[in-house]
Length: 330
Image 1 (cartoon, helix red, strand yellow):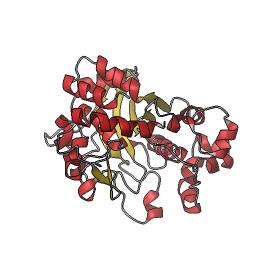
Image 2: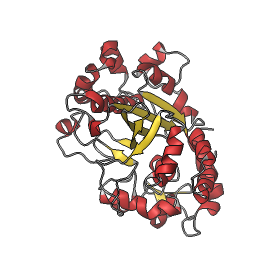
Image 3: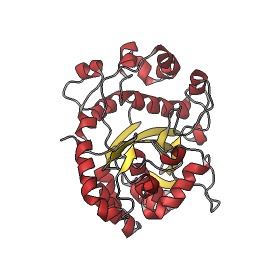
Image 4: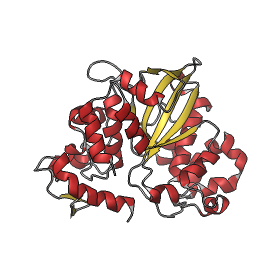
């Protein structure tokens, strides 16, 4: 059984444990009642209770749409396999909790000395800047996407967005910005997305760095999801670090962090690009990307490992940890 299907079945079993009685009623997703969805008017319960109000407020104040969100995308999706809600459930509790965020991220970035406020984001209601930003597209149009699409950039839509982002000062004194990509039950087919307009959009950035040294055949092979997303986020990191528009947030280093379930073999093992599949036989998607990305610019960890790290933290909230363990232990 595919990971996505097994998760849908699991949610049917654990709905009574996690959600209110009213929320457990089948919700509509794409106009069809689904047992793995919350009742439409209770979509907000897709988020952990303690972060529900502040997270929705964070997105609303920044005009960030929720993916497949209800109430004109101002509320989370009611689909329980929603990747965005999963990401927010894991990371929003770190937005104001610097000690907890440092403890968790240091497990993956041992050179982390001090987490820094994300001061290009808007301030929180308490007047402070968050330590994690969601759907970050950059303070400038580093990839020139608005020129192609002919509209203003929106966080989380119509522009390459990091699902989450944070910055820290390293022990060597340099400042590092991390752009994050989060996956949950996603799986992808083999559609070639390489229309000419897209290729023209990212061609300059591709040839402006190490990727360009690998030739046009690599470029053409990356317009298959999820490689297309990985390429765009990696190019965004490249341009934020040292592109024509300068350094994002004055950071010295900009890297990509990818988080996805180890259990989602459909995402991790299926290689959708014919050229990459032939070039790297018997190699999964993320391992291929590790080989393609510039050295030390890409890190992949599993949701399972992140959950284990949170469970071992000394400053985490027990109710939040129990919620994550119940909901995301597949």
